[in-house]
Structures are given as C-alpha cells and as structure tokens.
Image (tube, rainbow, N blue to C red; front, side, top):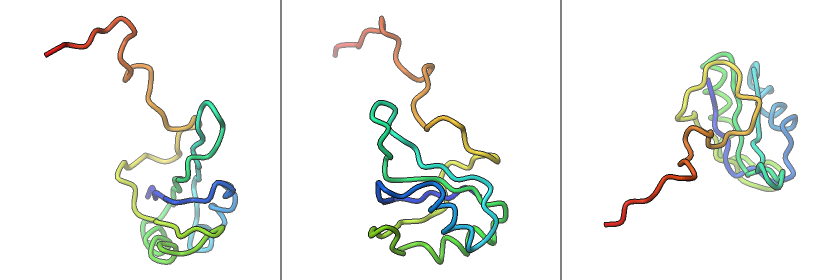
Length: 107
C-alpha cells in the first residue's frame, strides 16, 4: 500500500521516515521529493509498505504524531502505485506540458 505523509520538516531524511514506518511493518520503499531547481525537499513524502494490515497500523499510529517538531498528516495515497516508486522526483512529464508553439484561445 502506498502511504502519503504530509507536513514533513525540511530536515527530515528518507532514512528517518523509513525507520518511523519500519517500527510498524516491512517498508518496501520511501521517497521524499525535492524541488528540481533548488534541491530543497517539498515537505511531503511517500512510503510503500508490503502488507495492507501493517500499513493501516502505521497510518493509525503515525497520523497526528510529531516528527522533527512538526505534526504529521499520514493517510493512504490517492494514487495507488505498483511496487516501487519512481526514481525521479514526481513532476509533470514532458508529454503533459503544453508545446511551446501552442496558442491559447481568446474568448
């Protein structure tokens, strides 16, 4: 199950997030996306856990808990990934961008 973790402190590392969830079950993957231009973390992350029961237990235990001085918001991710998260930070793909020569319609 893929879990969304919001309101992470900017100093929180992927290893710290992984350790927090590993106390409740097996963690398959953990990512904290960074801004592509600045390299600064964006304040949220994703954790993939192998078993749904363990994931639900981790969500219940870690939601509204304090990590690095900030209150976490933990919930099941809306977008269900399959297995591992992408290696690159989540961003708009080139195909989703408007072509440079595209014109807006004026109404």
